[in-house]
Length: 134
Length: 83
Image 1 (tube, each protein chain N blue to C red):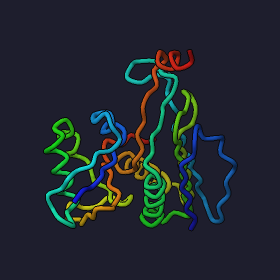
Image 2: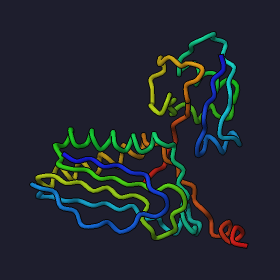
Image 3: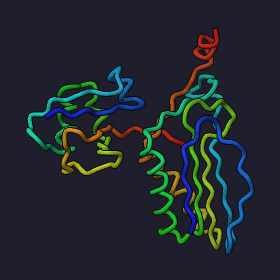
Image 4: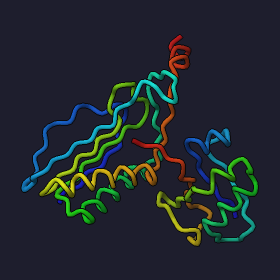
């Protein structure tokens, strides 16, 4: 059983390949920043995290997911600070023996993260970023 | 006793500040629930937002009856939007 959780500054870089002994299913979910928020164009999202609680909560959820769904491994990463539109701000990788438990765990984890992990996003409107650039 | 509570996200926006220090009527120890009640009483603009919020004590979300001491780090955790 392997669990990794991390809060990282800025957009997440592409994930390296991942191998887990005994895994018949490897799932990777990436949350991307959309260029529009509430109908308004944005340049990106700024993520505020309460450290170190945010990382600890991600790790706690990962541990709970491993136990609940009999997973082999979970790796989760979330951005802190500014992430531009079209970039990745969240990545969850799950390894399990079979696909069903991995797919169920993916949904379960993300639902709980959105309820319990102290991370807040703030959209940065295009106008605001232009003012900042001046 | 005095306790300092940290705010993030929409709570900090509503308060126009990232923390507040409360003068609690209790002497040495109060509870997380009492802190939340004091916040709602003294800062009416937080009332609605606090309904679904938890109090974290020293980086752990706690139940309302959790004892709180003067030097503990408190934070309002709610309306999160990760992902």
